[in-house]
Length: 168
Picture 1 (cartoon, helix red, strand yellow):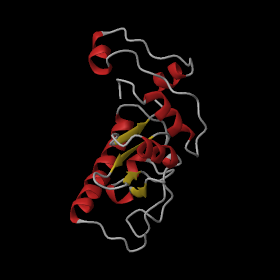
Picture 2 (cartoon, rainbow, N blue to C red):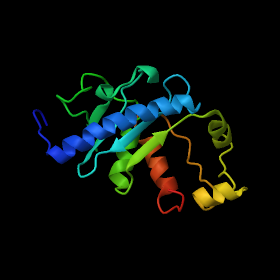
Picture 3 (tube, one colour):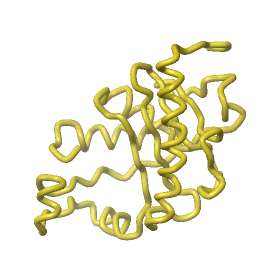
C-alpha cells in the first residue's frame, strides 16, 4: 500500500471524515460521554475499504484532522498518509471488524459514559420506557457482551448484538 494513490472522490471523502471524526471527539468530551482518552469515533470512507480513527492515547482537545489515522478494513494503518506515524486507537481491531461484517455501517461511536457503563454492568437491555426512546430506537436498546480491549472481541460483540436489530 506504499505510495497508494486515491481518486479525487476518495481523497475528498478521507479529508471530510478526518474533519468530522476530529470534531466528534470534541463532542464526546463536551457531552460527558468519555473520561480521559477512553472511547473513540471512526468513520468509513465512502466508496473505499478504508476508515478514519483517532490515534491511541491522545487527549481529545489536542486532536485535529491531521492527527486522524487512515486504516484499511483489517485495521492496518495506511502508510504514508497523515497521522500514519502514530499508533491507532486500541479499539481499531473492533472498529475494523464491525466495518468488515456490517457493510451498511458508516460510523462507529464507542463511549464510556457513566450511566451507560453502569447499566451495561447489569447485563440487561435498556427498557423502552419513554416516548422519545420509542421514537428514536423503536424499542429496548440492546447491551452487548463484556469484551476485552485490544483485539476484535468488542467488534464481534457489537456485530452479534446489533445484526438484524431495529435500533441500528
